[in-house]
Length: 475
Image (cartoon, rainbow, N blue to C red; front, top):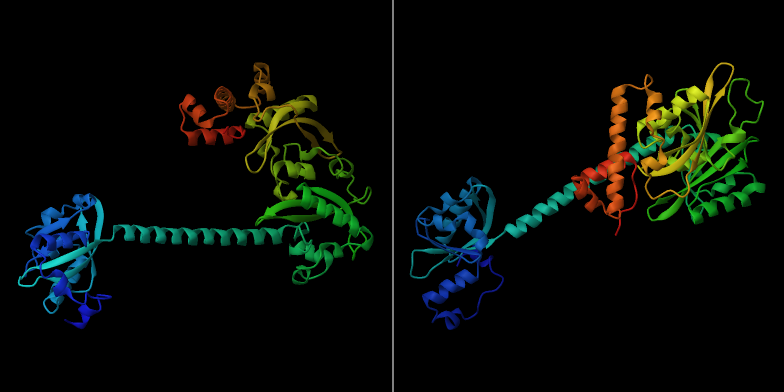
């Protein structure tokens, strides 16, 4: 027996003549069939003389049609050389090592089989014993796909981290990322490092309260600990250890890798009379002290000054994320809400208790009431908005209960808003009414509501998000 054949076995039977001397042809065939997923009888010329297989899943590959054909004619082109090698090896040994051979089939993936050839004593024929490798190949394919998916996710994570680092450093407002438990600085942006006049590398790991004057450190500790414990934003007027000016410190908790950390932002407080521009609007007494969300925009609704409560309401991390955007990015279940609000402001100068919704940056809709007034100055005009959460509303806002969409209100927009846009908004309102009715009738079961409306579940989810209907799904 050749060395090549010896390496194919872990251990041979010690007395094969004792165990198999009386084995008849039926038993031998049974051994070949049971000991392999597929067995072929090959002639000396390499033709398939007979086939045996027990798994019905092999039938679509039509092994029965291999009979009478050369074995190499039943395999894929890259397997032909392997077949020839096996047939060559069996002429010099009683058995061969295993090789993977692939059989093609129309409309099906290739059939991978691990074959070993065994010579039959007293016969010119050879037995090819095959192991079906489809499960192993499928597992390998899934592992490769999982690996590729992991690499894509890792790449996306690195790209997101790079974007975060760039934005974090470019933001003009001083910001610190603080460990919620130890109150030590985890990260700091360039504006904060410049403000405290220390390099970022030396700030990381330092307790954040040491940056402020000693007399206020206990109050700062209390605010930081309360924000971390309660999960709510808070603010405090502070003074830095290296400066005389006052700053408004805002603390925003957020979850990071299973724990609550803190985003600490600083904004310099400008006292009355410090600004030489008499037209500059000083929102200090109004915006930063009221418990309600307050926004000051220009005459077209572009945000100029939001307070912290508004940032919390729309889930915005910084003012830079909000300033310069139109208020209609958040106000209203449809664009017509803001148009109607601005139309009333232009005509009457003020609006009281305008019912609508606020959509935060994650798509959640909150029922609110808005009071607004035009604030005129010598050279420009601004609009102040006071936004408060509506109480006693349902989990998802109702168009009929939350928005003043009577026909007369639409009439007020004629000449101000194109007819095409009015019709589109009216269609959206009707669509939202139908969705809310379906949700009410099905107890907020979205699958049943989608079926009732003749929509796929995914289409319903898209419309729910677009209209700001965000009640939790019933269990």
